[in-house]
Image (cartoon, helix red, strand yellow):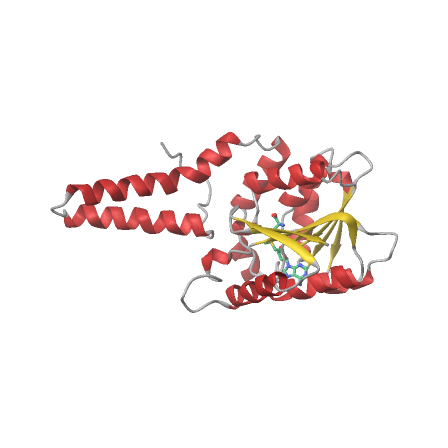
Length: 277
Ligand SMILES: C[S@@+](CC[C@H](N)C(=O)[O-])C[C@H]1O[C@@H](n2cnc3c(N)ncnc32)[C@H](O)[C@@H]1O
């Protein structure tokens, strides 16, 4: 049975799977209303709907639970009135709770930090700090996360959360456009063992190019890029949003680059892992 969270602001569907679930639930309700003569049809719809709807909750249930600090950070992010903050001019960008990566992706990033035996992590796009704190939790005591964030309100919000965790001290936040921060990096700040790209999609190709040109990735390092399925837009035969177009172009750039090896995982809204060869 699927547990739906009703106590917090409910998140809208933003991943290919959650969009499929929403459509299937809608289709099933309509089929029931129309009382089709063929009962097998409605039964089949129920079955495929349950198959899709149960997947994310089951994956979450089978994954190591998030820490109390991460759970609290996610809850506070859901409770925040992001539209109100924008209307009041407190945020410079239209931020929303759906931007937060969350439990399973956070746990996956933690696994990567362990597997890569990472000491230095770079994050492009901090938001309220979920992925940064998840990665920091997996780092050794002398490990560090350097996180770039354009929006000062989001950066302040994240730093308040970091103060509640013993791992928060491993994270340093730099506020401003990530491309400028990337270009300002000095050689002793890098190279990085893990780089998580999760900011403005239009700059993804430029971030990757800058990382490679400036040798910011350590020889055994990994680059993780979020939202590379962008709600299915890159492979759907329909008009794309600006973000959908940017991700489609980025994925092509990566596929055509003979100097990298990559895999696109259907985790949440798509996560591509890239290494230099
Ligand atoms: C998807 S959210 C990051 C989510 C976060 N990594 C997590 O897992 O919770 C993207 C963030 O990138 C920030 N951002 C957008 N454009 C940026 C830019 N040019 N430079 C730095 N940060 C930017 C946004 O303000 C937003 O907080």
